[in-house]
Image (cartoon, rainbow, N blue to C red; front, side, top):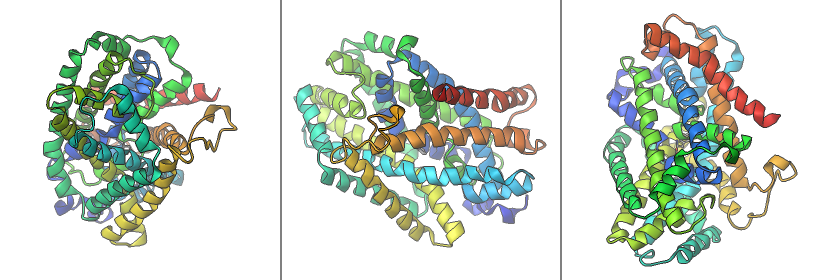
Length: 460
Ligand code: PHE
């Protein structure tokens, strides 16, 4: 393919190194999904069996799609929509595959609308920790603080707005150089802090119980909907199926080995999630809290610990600040496909695209803000038994994480495995001989079959 059809593949535009791409893709992967969402959905779905299915989904479905999506992005070298349009031509495939690009742009748009609201919670909690609000507080007081935040739509809206402004500002200026530097230092620091939290949790007296909750599978606690949640979360946490890796892959130098890179990202991402679980569940059990408490889980357990440990105010402040950074590096990756699309298709400048896209996303986010208070008992699809009791936020999360991302992943696996020309695939992916064959077998058969089985079970 010539340079002119791959505008992102120009030398001055590329990631500066393999490491830079890993940091950006890991920055996208590691976020609220790992620290906020993974523990609470693990709690809601009964622990061990859910974790096992989630891990299987990561390596059987997540990693192959991560590889395929990045490879497609690099081949296309443009925004997800334009990349898919170009590739359907150059690969001589049906036009219908273009839906992958559109699915990505729409899903990125929707996911950021609720992600930014939760990002706002992290902002609030930096302030709470810094001003010593947790010090000596008991579970009830800490729960009350969280309940008070959710009950106040104006406060939620304000922090949602602040979060969106930060994201729009970074994306509007062009992401790569600044992002590389930020992620470089802060992500390893978050990792260290999580390890410190796990060590603290080890002494809480309930570490053994937490380990067996997370790692001894009891399949009687897992529903078919729970299996879909595990699959959806594997997609969510790796940021696959949504065009983000296609967008980031479009700037990836040809020399980088995608297979190895993808594995590194998956291992880092999974370790962060498991560490978060190991930090949180001991505190949940030691304090007699409910593992299935829902989206507030980390905001009611971690502050308790920060309130009891010495130096907890400082430690808590740093922790929530790093959580914010992790959320921001994910959020900017969500805005990227939307901005690239506006730039390429509507001819709008990057700054204006970021502001326009950001405003629209901010507006949709109000639905999530209200889901926790004024619209708490509004259940738009409540007449369907499966969606009973689900708020606007729950539905958006379900639509993006459990439908659009895994189905986008399915389409990507099928496109790369069956529709694309084979000749240059081994070199593009970075695998040879038997490992290439094994990978293609997984991508062509096991990955699609895995996703299909989960969906069929949920439909029947
Ligand atoms: N992977 C991110 C997280 O775990 C969320 C995300 C979803 C990022 C979709 C980009 C796209 O927090």
